[in-house]
Length: 340
Image (cartoon, rainbow, N blue to C red):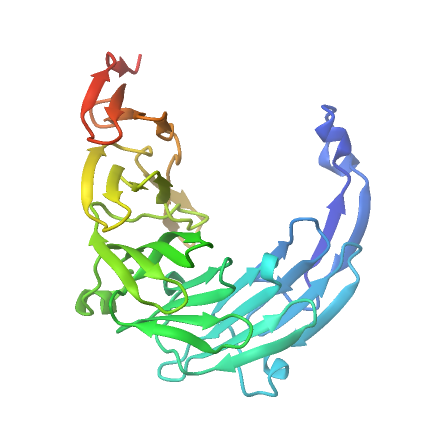
């Protein structure tokens, strides 16, 4: 069954008027040539709309005209991905990443979205999961975290740029410095049984993005979590002067030149995740998890100080503290702000 999509005129709602949904006029209506059970997404300006299922992709334009529609096995003359378990679309780069997971025979195919053609396909990289695949826009490259190494791959050609066994693990966040051609990267232990036996560690790494040379590698405290729905990592990295600041279960500060830890302040950045039971009728239910993310204000920096909101959900209070950026010494803290 083809999946139908439609676009509604929402200008009246934006201007403050209220209408029942059935009163909104339809601008256009179109159909995907597949079930669109995996992806049903649009780019930022609505000029491309993609729908995919396990083995086929359809691309529409802003008026629902089919730009192209192809089965994956036809993209690479049956040599590449035929059924994609993992699918990621990168609109800024016009790339569709497809991963066909079969024990010992995993395959990757990368598709040019605008042309509807495969750019490259390979079976060199096995045992990847969605956690272990990262597209780095600044480098136009894929980062694969494998069992025994980390690989940077040209997103256009599939060519391996470099490989290192100096650090391993899923990517929790990164910063790219174009002038120095360097990356600051957080990597952490991925989920899954294999991770228990592979020596994965949690690291903050400064790395030469062109060669893969590790400039320094240091460990940090905490556990990298992801948002329940979007799966975005709840880690922030930023640089202020000659210091690297890692926002994870508080604020951890490192020397940018050598990676040595300088000081840290522990606090809770998000409300505790909630769990519950969702009833789906006669077939039973499932446990659902959620949370309130980014509920605590980010650190506020001045030239020499930083202001932090500290506290714990367990003791139900918060307070503001002022720290010296250089030393981490606490200058003052406010009275406790408790829930009424």
